[in-house]
Amino acid sequence: MKSRHLSVAAVALLLFAGAAEAAAQGRRNSPLAAQAMHNFAICAANRSPRGAARLLAMDFRTEAYTQALRRFALGHNSCTARRTSLRFSGSLFAGGLAEQLLREPIGARPLALLVAHDPARPAIEARDETEAMGLCTVRQAPAETQALLATEPGSAQEAAAAAALTPAITACLTRGQAMRLNRPGMRALLALAAYRLVRESRPSS
Image (cartoon, rainbow, N blue to C red; front, side, top):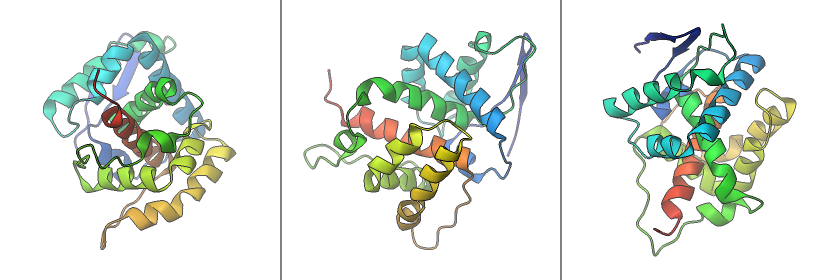
């Protein structure tokens, strides 16, 4: 896996592209680091919601997405305190954007209503096995996914909500598939899957 160190003003971001990479990374994220990254993504999404939506509509497997993710993150360096250095996966940043963009369409409604399979609409094709697991999990356990995304990153509530999702995640793994998920990576993966399901299930305007 290749990493690139980028700096704009006093901000340094280590970005990796692709939803699968958040799940595959073995590094542990401290609660404070996870919260800082989450706050950064919320700020960026609030300042540029259309830009965040355009970014998440791209295919994460492409170099164009990698470059767009990098530009978007660095373009919002003002969302961090001066002399702050953030090191994180681009997938975790994208997951934070997805969480924030989900707030409006979900509102007070159950996520289950927005992600339920509609046989009248084309099937949503997963772009890799990790995304397939995420899409399956969100549809199998929408209430548990919604509960997870409502918690503070790094909190005891998040840990309990993540544990409640373990049976659904296990059931959604394809036969012979092994996956190592840390909690921030799992949260990002499910947020991105939920966002894609909600976005692609909404009627075209």
